[in-house]
Amino acid sequence: MTLILSRREVESLGKDSLVKFLSLGMREGSQIDYKVSLSGDNRNEAYKEFLKDITAFANAHGGLLLLGVKEPSDHCLGKDQIVGIEDGDRLANDLERVAATSVDPRIPGLLIKPISVSSKEHVITVYIPASFIRPHMVNYRNHRSFYIRHSESSVPMTTHEVRDTVLSSATSEGQARNYALQEEYEALEYLIGDNPAFLLQAVPLLSLETMWDVLAEPIEKIIRGEGRSNRYDYSQFSLESTIRPTPTVKGVMGRESRDLAQPWITEIHRTGFVQAVYMDIQAKPDDPTKFALHDGYADLFRAFCDLCDSLWKETQTDIPYLFRNKYFNAEQTVFLIQHKSTFPYAKRVIAWPEQFHHLGEPLESIHRTWTKQLFHAFGLNIKVP
Image (cartoon, rainbow, N blue to C red; front, side, top):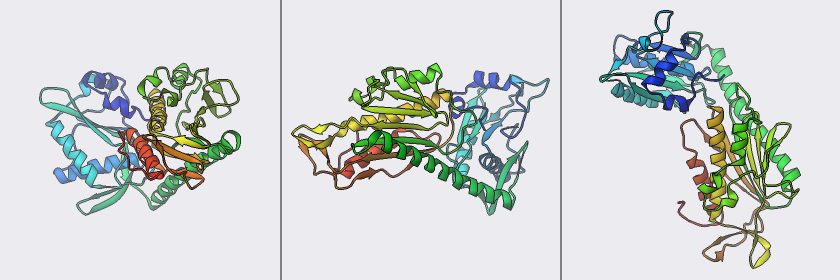
């Protein structure tokens, strides 16, 4: 289910954009809740109610909690809904702390943003994404319970709901991995064969509510990577499609030319799946029987992550992803460094550990980890810039 606002939109909210959003008059429901203030007779009760609300959203389809805001009505919209909370920036910090210490497991991608609405008052906007590691339990001052959002209420989860949530989380991860493995098999069969090649994948861990319109002009511009090569030291790794992307059964394909022999191919599926196959691995200058990698391949990893980030931004995609990276047919590959080369890699495949990317986490950590582990695969201890 698509959230009312994306995380990026919440991050950029200010007073004027908040008023504009409130003017839409969205009624309280399964994905939005308004509260004039935290409820409860004391601070502990108020924090417990807050934890109940955010875990209930996370255990359902995610949502938005607005503190310091009245519910909309026919006579109360926009700026008239804003009540504000005194010392709201301090309260937001306290809520971040209690959410980090009293929810098990932590809600990845949770965002608590205070918005100044007067010299002394704030509205606290809480963005709760849908989670693939649910259910999340409130564990606060001997209170331990699971909650879920139903319509306008946060209620305790039944045993059946807890069991179904656990199973759906495991199923989502399994389905994502199976999808990636099928695409890996097809790439090996029809593209890579016995040649050395990188296979980079970003796999959505939750289903999209709305499929990507991969033939739309903004997506085409992203695939063509206008200006992307200017970001890297090695522009040949920028994954810029120099020809118009080609429609496929599952989505669209980007490539460098119309030749059968392609240095690389990118695939963007309507499901949100992103893949790059990079096959332009050059022979070692003084030994054509061996292939050579170097530290410039860090730009390939970075370009792939930049491609994903641009697609997410354009499509307002707010779901967790699984990142996978493999280098196939590696036995005759060496690593060049300072005019020297390492011994050839001894195994057929270099397989990077899978990484989960949650909302709000920088994609930089993905490509930096891949680069570091590439160095380690060849026994090198090089500092990643």
